[in-house]
Image (cartoon, rainbow, N blue to C red; front, side, top):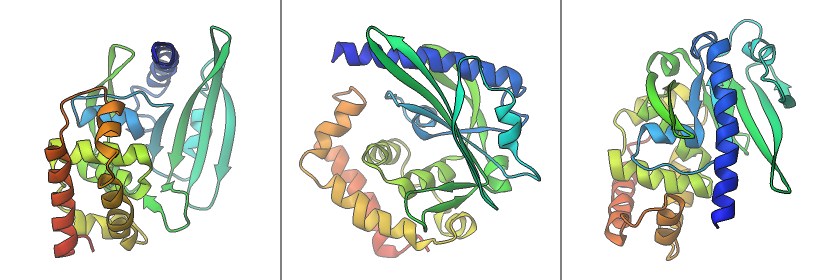
Length: 252
């Protein structure tokens, strides 16, 4: 385990260099206006942090492509591993391999323009003007250095996490609710940015609550954040809040 932690620290140190480069070349993430999402943005909303493999940014769609502008400022040593452009959305991944002992470690940054796309066709989140307007610059700690980066509002970030609902997302959701509760304004916001709003409700009922109820969840929740603070009582309170919202059908 110590070796894995050291490897993750090495990855984060390399990632920091790329983020500082990106900040410099984009005028502090303002040109284009980039919003940090994923595991690193979680650090803006809870007191704990966890290691995460990728660094995710989103950007509003413009005439032409912000992705092209970003590709022009690729940091030294990085290559474009993947690039997709569709009518309303695009995706690009920057990748670099670094050496750690005898292992090659991948460092990557993902950029989504126009829409956030999940694994299923109906898992779509629109990156609209309100998402950009309601974002805030906050200090994010990366490799022990604090960087001011724009993150979505808590409401928008919560929606992103629920729609994704991977195992790591569900642990993040538990922490978000434990620290901040379920955000207000879900009903209207879901209609604005989800072409298929019912996806949100189904994720909570069919994916998130059943995962939280598993006997192994508490240990995995504490383990991913390296804390002993979370308790069974905390977990039950999170479930209670989610079930309350499901009962009143406050989503759509």
